[in-house]
Image (cartoon, rainbow, N blue to C red; front, side, top):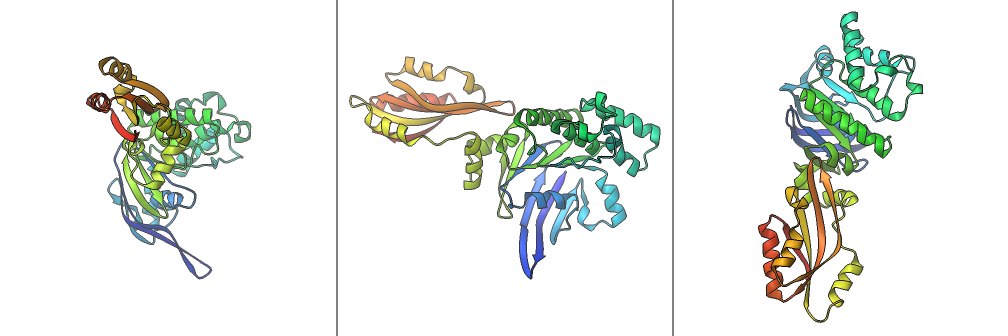
Amino acid sequence: MINIKNLTKIYHASGQEIVALDNVSLTVNKGEIFGIIGLSGAGKSTLIRCINMLEKPTAGSILVDGQDITKLKKHELRLARQKIGMIFQHFNLLSSRTVFGNVMFPLEIAKVPRQEAMKRTHELLELVGLTDKANVYPSQLSGGQKQRVGIARALANRPKLLLSDEATSALDPQTTRSILQLLRDINKKFNLTILLITHDMNVIKEVCDRVAVIDNSRIIEVGDVLNVFTAPASPTARSFVNSVFSREVPSELLHRSATGNDRKDTWLVRVAFIGASAGEPIISSMIRKYDVEANILYGNIDRIKDTPFGNLTLELMGRPADIQEAMAYLESRGLEIEVLQNA
């Protein structure tokens, strides 16, 4: 759906060049929810604004559904934008129009016949759960309701691509979850490609199929969300993952493991659970099978979309040969094992 090649965007200010995007290449597949995550100033907002040509790239190409939008004339670009929906961080609703009028506005711009436009608007308000708010003005809505209006408006012209620019960053956690669930439902119902940018890894975890990490104007990592969470390849990705799912073992636990048992060898290991193994009693099975003791020191279990995922830090005590056999058993059951310390 999106194929970006060697995209560069340079701003000029006070006689200086500011590189916002530096030779960025990226592919987004049709029907997927693709996330772009980065810190403020990394270039993610510039990237999404280039995709709908609100910002004109300095160099490179952007193909949307096979069409290079960087080469379109003004009239052609207006038509192309009708198939690219945009959800904004601060809603950008027209305060003088009702909810119905806001959703209907892009259909009026596209000169859709009035009866058809009204029918489409009713369908969209039902889709986002705001049928009862049709005649209400934006000032009377909550933040989540305003964003639902923004989503309905973005879908008005039946776009092939939906862009989300920090759409949940102004919302509370509970409302954020409801908006993300709405985006998931829309993606499944219409097979609509969604590209969203965020600085919140929880958003990526909840809805995205794949993610790109942008840092200092460059894409530094791209992968399936599960792979990035379980094995982040860059320091920036590790930092984002740790913000929602810490893999660091507290120093007091490391010290405790090294000094807490003088009768047996003590190994400190990290065990990663992915998928179905997260719900199986593998640790208790290991204790029954092998002459080792296990003490759970630290850990957490979460979900990435519909996949359970987590890790535990274990203190394994026993003879070295028994501990190694126990770890081999865990690995044979599909768990990833990392030895943090042995003594």
